[in-house]
Length: 469
Image 1: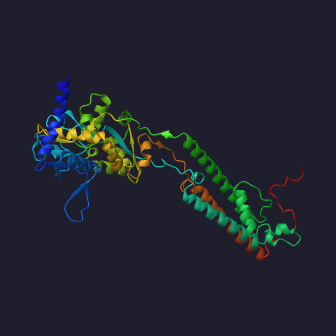
Image 2 (image 1 turned 180 degrees about the vertical axis):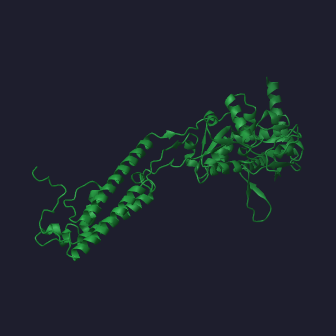
Image 3 (image 1 turned 120 degrees about the horizontal axis):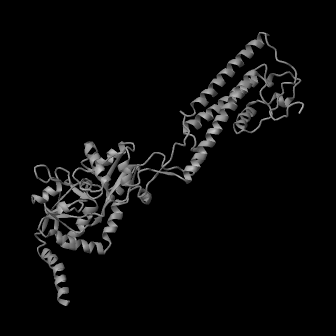
């Protein structure tokens, strides 16, 4: 047993000592690809190209542990790599196969097909395919302004303008119509004569809008037409508000989940979806035995435009699709994209596999063995966890736990100007008609054709019981 322990210790430590012993000349060429936040170009005021990101920090730690230098360069075609019809490898994998690089540093999934031509280190991050989708409109709602949300801003503003216009029109009619209380014969009560001054006109329209009472009604035909239209409008307005607010509270406590909760849901939906050409996700569906996943692969193949060349292209396609396209990508990158402004993306679906990201090396070079030993040291200090918190904590990271679950889509519960068009049209026509009648009243009275009565029978009080009751 002691001999076995010594052998294991030497097998672990000797490669590191050999590498450190040649540190003065140990420089490895690293090929990488721009993939936020793993590798990003950093601004360099002194000129030249420098990089930053999750993988760049790991490489810096590996340099210190192993005592080596890494010469980092971007792959020309910006691809991870796949085999062409001619049997040639492209991208990062092509660089390793042709010995143009020693190490490939990227979110490169560990795959058996790739392992035939390259070596892998142990994984530095677990990853599995998930679904990235655009957050449905109306997903979030402010609790503070809950009571204002049943109507859109345009509806509230137009209703306020209507309230002011009706109140002023009522005052104008009361003040200048010869048939109104303001011009009634002196035999009427004083409180009746002042019933529709500016203050009382606004009080009348406000109280009736809330289905409360105001003792008097207008005396003139134009005033009564205006009030009748206003009462009809407020009936529509309040019914719509109560219905929309009730729907808001019901949805707030019991939201309807989106239909896409799993990959099976996506396969049976009418949505378009895709992944990165030649990537591990595409290979997963291409080689799947599950009928639904085979169906998904056939769907991707039948729509070549749904397969993209990069993560950035796929994310852009999701944002511009208005919810009609889903991008299948590995969990870490999907969570990163969903945590970035404008916070309009979410991740759904349980990961199909428990694959991992690892560094890749030229086949048989032994470099990956050395990197794996150093990665163990980094893992033991929780350094990888700290780096993940540093680079994957975007502006929307506070919502990360919610993003990993299916969001909720609320039905339309906001009353818009389009919905309220008839009510506002009716109100506008009522105001116009009442003002036309108001003009006719002045004209007819001026000509002596119609003379206002002097009795008090017109002193109608809204809440007085009917005579004889």
